[in-house]
Length: 158
Image (cartoon, rainbow, N blue to C red; front, side, top):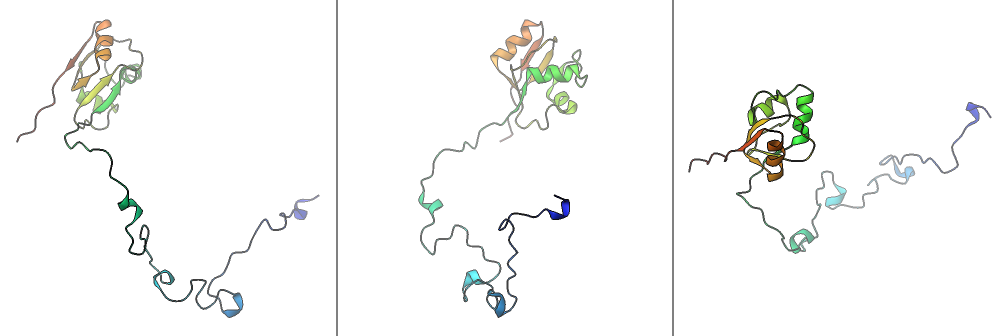
């Protein structure tokens, strides 16, 4: 067998249907769209429309609750801080603040503050000041002789 003798299995490939190419093609005149109506025209956008019936997404009951006062914190794990210290992106000798975490690239946006969690292994003695922290994170930093200060987020002027 040679490369020029290779061929696909019969029926494996199908020719493209050329629409609107005369009556002999079988899809001439209306191009397989039927006669008149919205769907025969271009620019049809009727997703979710059920012909005047109440749509399914409106018939289903609403569930849940969105708290408008919810705080979204940028979450940082101790293991990630250690990784950045090892990569020399954060200086462990200087106090670590939310702004220094942004400058190092560990946090993209401060949002409503930075919250430290205890996931990962910490080996450096650190002095951290952030908006929030888990109790296990505070204990993990204190065990190595460091401090993790939690400040309250500034209240917005009313």
